[in-house]
Length: 552
Image (cartoon, rainbow, N blue to C red; front, top):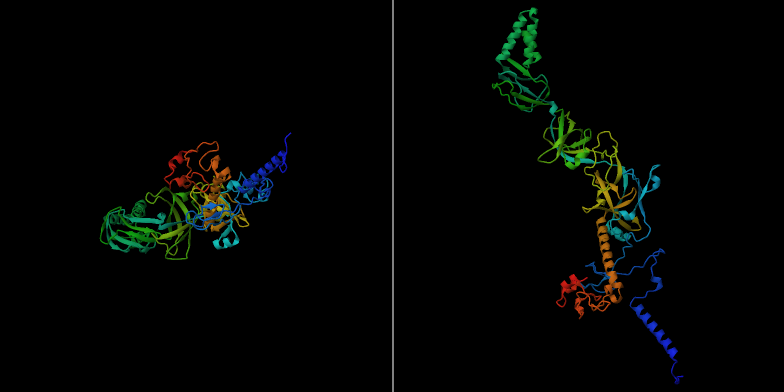
């Protein structure tokens, strides 16, 4: 039995007190360094509570500098400012949200509410996370006003598309004729003596002397003097004169006078404008020579130039409208009558022939014109052919002819779409200042600076038409910050502030040296957390940053 001295505690009591003090000191140290948190701060996702995000600090000049404590920017020395909370990112909630409902059997069967679908339609939901094109952004009303944010509603209506191009007026080739000789002769007198003169059918063009024509006249008059017994010869001689293009009025004049004329008058076969003249008074003209070219300009053609990607939307019978610079405000209405089956070698376009009536002779050949062809979408849907979603709609459709019904589709303003070349993004307003980027598939480019949307939106949704580029920048910045924070999170959560169990002096948890770290653990080559930093090594001669490139 041990002797106990006065004033000394019993052994068992000393052990209990020592253990209690050790537990208290250890718990206090763990709480001070952040290893213990209050129970109230624990976030329970299953309970549906919202985690209180930490206040982050950033530099206004260098937004990629983000810390959890206030201080100064390591680059410019400016005081860090609190990072504005733009709201939780899309997709953090566990429940999937339905963006719209779609009928797989109908490419245009997109409905915001299943009750709007026709009876018997089998609808499938399209979820928001399947269409998300980035990180959601939340802004307050004051910021929205300062940004000049404007929105528009997604509408479902008829797809009306017009092709605007240029063209030039030309002659109607079906209304052009040439006046040529069927005999040799000399022009005695020229009645139409300049190009551009208008002639009516039957007007005199020129008087010509020809030995062949003179012999034909004498033969006809000799047959007539022979009496009715030689009727067949009379008809044969008269027919010969008509075959020489002698007008019927000239033959009747010959019968009335009974005298053979030295020069016979050749008259115009129809009405038009003399566009070419090679006849000269007194000239000798051989048989077959073209003396006049006459064109009827009461109807003209317009050759409109269509680019290759627009060709599938042009068809015969479509309405065409034309305006001319010399008569502003007046619109001429015609139609497409023919599309040539080959391309122009130099301009690499296809010519579509348009027809316009020209009663006032305002339309003159070789005038340039602005042409607008109304295609009213394409007829692919009305013909029952299948359409591929997500394409730009530049040639996957057949042209709509005249009389076919207009196709229906979703329409948004073209300025609402952010085109990156690889994908197309619109920002959808979700309410309470929240905007979500949505990837969409586009179709036809429509009139009034609108575009067809084939996938990604539902009727009635609201999209941003002005200021969306600022939202896109904020979304990308927020996404980049989230990725940076995700990379830095393991380093913060590791004991001692070092990632993968490495100590601040470059020693791993098992006591071995980490690759690329030196035993001296120079503080000048390490970041604020004490980790061996690759970019810090580039500024110092005390550590070799090439070894860090090889370290695991």
